[in-house]
Image (cartoon, rainbow, N blue to C red):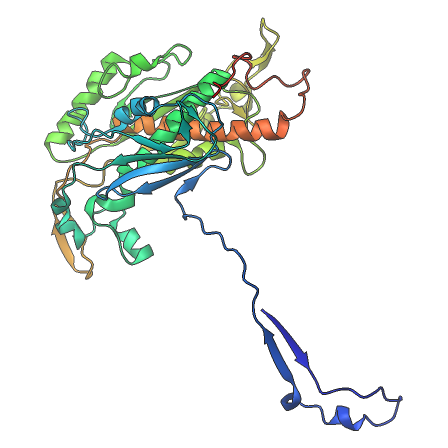
Length: 435
């Protein structure tokens, strides 16, 4: 808004010591004229608050648990990447409900449809739209919860923030929203694998009090087939059976338990991440902690590293047989100073027990009256088995976003071969498909 204050005309200056001109003496507030110029119209950009992730490989999710469907829009995907709906369906099937007795019994095929951004089997560089319809809804299961707040759920805080909420299934707070993360995560994993040989793998390392011992999984050799060999997604068969038994026991009592998902990244390009606020582990922490039910994040040695001295914790450098600088240990978790160093990236994500349980609990309703609630609906007795592909997706989204940033800033011009190496070191001859 612009304004101007215009006095009556000032007829001239006065000499020192002389009286003020009559015109100036008559000047008063009442003689001021204030003119307000109309504001120039500007183009305003509105972004979906809290529903968009990434800077260069940008993902926006949409949809609700019991609405017409859920999905995402992926913007910034490189062109000429071979892509089909089948590429996304593999991870969507790993995430979907009803896949085993230890997950929610809701029956959804989670069949995805790509409606833009792909032509003749390859990406075009334009926004990719992915949609998955909801087909097995039971809105009547949430009748009691329309007025009562589930303890430790987002019911109350959504009302506190918006003054209104989608009751059925929890709306956007439902884990069904993660379909819009897993689908683009599959695209990101494909780009990482083809361009730099990068693999992102996650597995269940703890269910309640059943904890996989350190060192029982070889991060250099563990495979997706080993992880997917059982319904709890633990690559150690002995501990997998113990975890399944723990979930079965709590499931029959109408209760829930939590656990931990460990995620590793092999062959990550060096140089990903930026100081100071965009450190790679900080970006990873934000990404995985945005998933539903997450309550903790550890990276590398994590909290256990606080029990060590500097001489015990430091990762000493050496030069391997290929002339590459490596570390003999990896307590840094593959990241130092917020930048990837080429070693295996590893992290752990803690998930709380599922909030919605069928045991009687004390709560309050929207009228602030204290009541008892027995929640109905179909919910996971333990979220960690289905959280595995969700964690992989968020980690992959961070890495591909950082890969694009690194390529734009530090690899646009010829690199310094004495200190840097190509981002596509493992697949230097890779060329995207041509139209």
